[in-house]
Length: 403
Image 1 (spheres, helix red, strand yellow):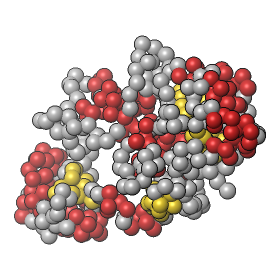
Image 2 (cartoon, helix red, strand yellow):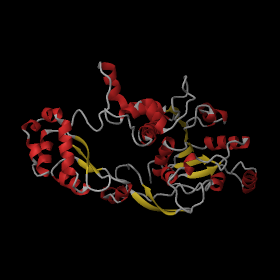
Image 3 (tube, one colour):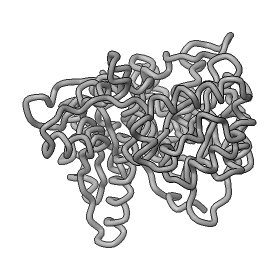
Image 4 (cartoon, helix red, strand yellow):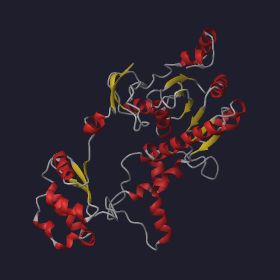
């Protein structure tokens, strides 16, 4: 039995960051009830990549990845009667989550105070972009917006070129769901000790800025402007991604001390350029870093990336192939740990799904349940959680309340 079995979560988190939080709760055994409707489906249902030939709203691989093990309850929140049903559901859930703009849940009668009036020990997670109060509370955005506003975009790139950012909606995938998950689990733990619920607010801009802590401290303490450094680091030289044979193939290499430098030189067959006595010390390598990078790139350019990685690792050199999606699906490390799972999906057929990114100690990989069809569990939840009879259910379906 999972650690979160018996935990029921009402999920108003759409698209990226919030949906990842509730996915991880669901993947670890919580019963997660996702709220959407045909009138307003989760935006991620229309986000590519799509499985060809599959009905609209059920073909998104992105949605399938972010919503495994959840249940879908089709509730049209534009109807006043739906809001009463939503409050009934909230009263029967241990955790209520949302990542809407501040004011949306309040207009539906689902504020923290509304919910806890009937469910005093509820844990109530919200994920506004810039907090629930203040001059920017009504600003909305997603990962790329937050990356730009936080300064994360400016951090990525080379010093002599325009910033390139992170290449993805990074705040949606790592810092924001990570902070929100830890905060929610901490609140669950505290409730198990004290019996008290609480409101948890994760302002997504703040948790993204957390990534930039060293740069913020440097900006406050040092009389110089931060400059992009690409893949370079103060504690490694050389450090970067180096070209390999094949189309757009690369290997990341990081040399942190003199022993690793000697190992790199040995692994490459002691090329003449690497035997410069100045390179035997970190200071010497750092002072001629650009020249070393060019020479190292010439060494790696003709080598197959995985062969190079294994050669360097066997010599004790930190190295890893920059893997393509195809490489990741076949990765020996992930495959050996049961990370990828082939799961039947009711509309797409068998699909490959990413499993749990972490497990509790001693827990083995568990079978994953595919993301739900829109409204797939509406009758089941209406009957079992809301104790609704079939007649009332059919009336609400006909009125497009359960829709």
